[in-house]
Amino acid sequence: MTLTEILRDSKRIVFFGGAGTSTESGIPDFRSQDGLYHLQYAWPPEQILSHTFFMEQPEEFYRFYKDKMSFPGAEPNACHKALVKLEQMGKLSAIITQNIDGLHQKAGSKRVLELHGSIHRNYCMRCGKFFTFEDIMAKPGVPRCDCGGIIKPDVVLYEEGLDGDTIEQAVEAIETADTMIIGGTSLVVYPAAGMVRYFRGQHLVQINRDRTSADRYCELSIHDSIGKVLGEAVDEI
Image 1 (cartoon, one colour):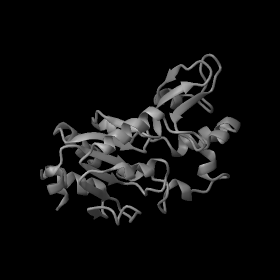
Image 2: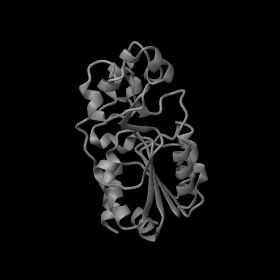
Image 3: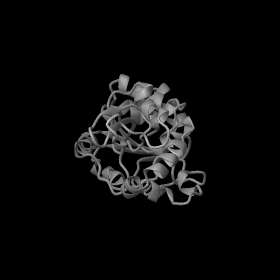
Image 4: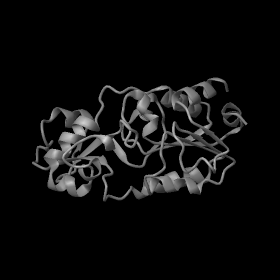
């Protein structure tokens, strides 16, 4: 079956996406040749983006975070827009994303489960006051609350666990889906990548520029631009 035929045949699609979903919006991924993990800093990105580093060196954390993790001008691309159309058709039951950029919501998607949190939610570590992404970017250096507490982005850093309620909702969405589309993810970051094994539906599809461990399991595996492939398939339904 073609991707368009699979989408026509499906009633409960779940989309499981990663950084490759947003690269066409100008946001770099992590593991490609030009990704964040290939940048030269005094510390590797994995260390900078850890809970220990954030607590011990918040100045350096925020210098990297504001420079390399925040893209205020990014706009939804063809992939995000195609998923909105699928949801409006009543075919897409959930988007499960490892991204923290909020572009799915900006495009108009309603049910988005953010496994790794969001740059658009930020909280004071002392009093719990909420701050927007714009609040954080407007504060120089380490952003602090009026109470003096350091503000922390609601993103999952290395050494931190995923939100239990979000995991439960994601697993339930995968278990009850008839089609699962894996898009723009290398499937090497756990525990998120391990969620694929909960799928028991009819159609397992992958759209990713590079090969992954899921290639041998998928009914259909397409190595191309996810925006182009998904956008064209949805338009043909």
